[in-house]
Image (cartoon, rainbow, N blue to C red; front, side, top):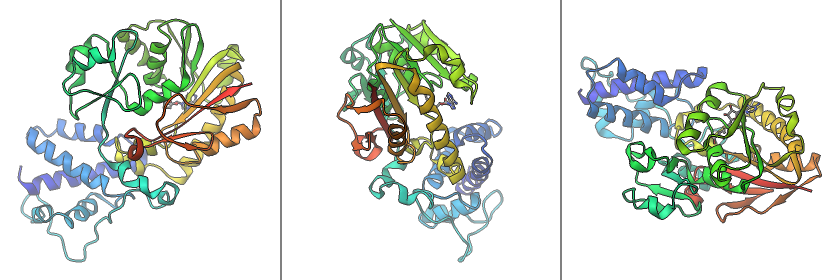
Length: 389
Ligand SMILES: C[S@@+](CC[C@H](N)C(=O)[O-])C[C@H]1O[C@@H](n2cnc3c(N)ncnc32)[C@H](O)[C@@H]1O
């Protein structure tokens, strides 16, 4: 494909990605994969070049672009070779006219920019690192490091290894033998904050497909009672095969009905040593992995999420036994989803007090700590550990 044809393909893809962000449709990666499935003429170099153009355009637009052409015109104003590809020949974009509007550069959506420390902004859109967690009950971190080329221990997470970008983790022996899970160092620290131990009763309230559940199971050595719940059937159903691969068969799963979660969990009242709430959130801390997600967030969606987070905290609190812990996490740097939620909970429930977290990463924020791509090299998280009197 010519540079112009690649630019035209990038515009078409960006149109689809922008429309999907507006309508709550598929993620950019899914749309890109779909696009190439029906365009076999695009070779691997073309695909890589088009994908690169699309992601460069997404990363440089804090607010949703008007359309794909505006997004690429904005990028072309900073890249002469790309601008030259707009030559108007067949299958290429029409030439850029001097006063044609291009999407302005930006990192965060305008309405959010003031709510996150400006020092954090650029790193929120940088490339994410590739981390794995070594299953402590199956292998030693140093032994696994020796199986993986150029693996280095993660700075804060005791079971983590950082791998070079693009390492084909799932093709290696450490993966096929169930010795490792792909998991960002920040997520590993959230599970560590639970301090799950053998013989405990632990509830992972928003378990999803079980990324953190598997880390909890590992810390429990497969002993005790571990319950994984979520309101999303498809996500929760992915947990069992993952647990089997890692050798943790005995994880209970519970599908929750939104609004009626407390009923389904009533038997656990004052029965849990630990309740982990890895709450649904805006995902501002993971934008480096899916940068178009920032075009999906609106003030109304954020309000809906903060309401759900408060609701989940109120469901979880009565399930903790005296002396037990409530661990709350969101992959967000917004205080309204993190520190403010915890301050509100502590205001309406005097049985809990904030406790120290068992790691050095992050900076103190309200009752918890804030981990960030810039300062910690992790996805962005707020995490707090509350202990019940
Ligand atoms: C941040 S994700 C969890 C990720 C997961 N813990 C992991 O480590 O992979 C938040 C989860 O909360 C779930 N969720 C949303 N509303 C819920 C509710 N009312 N009760 C329980 N889970 C809910 C979502 O389906 C989603 O899987």
